[in-house]
Image 1 (cartoon, rainbow, N blue to C red):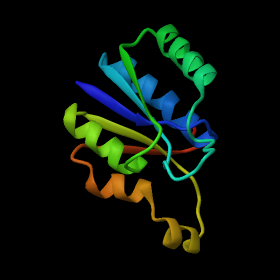
Image 2 (cartoon, rainbow, N blue to C red):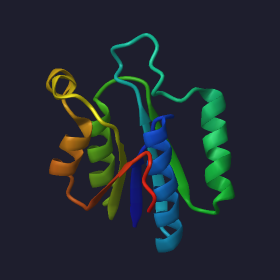
Image 3 (cartoon, rainbow, N blue to C red):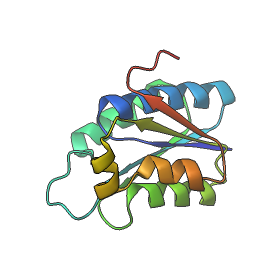
Image 4 (cartoon, helix red, strand yellow):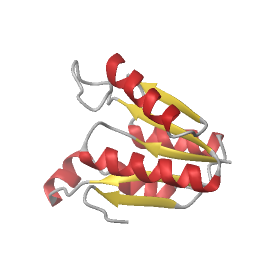
Length: 133
């Protein structure tokens, strides 16, 4: 079995990653970390660089879990990538971080979190950065 986590280097991404690591340890399953860029920007601070990739790899190794890191620099949006990977891997859980957005922000940019919550074929755990689980 597998857990899929959508990860960006942000407080919300960190909250999702920490909980996903906890769940992967608890269930003794593989964790797939999905980090992606919109692909329509020259610089995207959501995409981890080589140094951050190696730090993430070391962090997951130190956690003692089986893992894989999927890093996408362009193409489909994050929601599509997370949903596709979760379905292809028959994930038992998707973990995502949530951030507060204005109504106009949701209207203009859509909501990846909403799409994942509504379209996932498995349970989705959503966390705010300040979650105290």
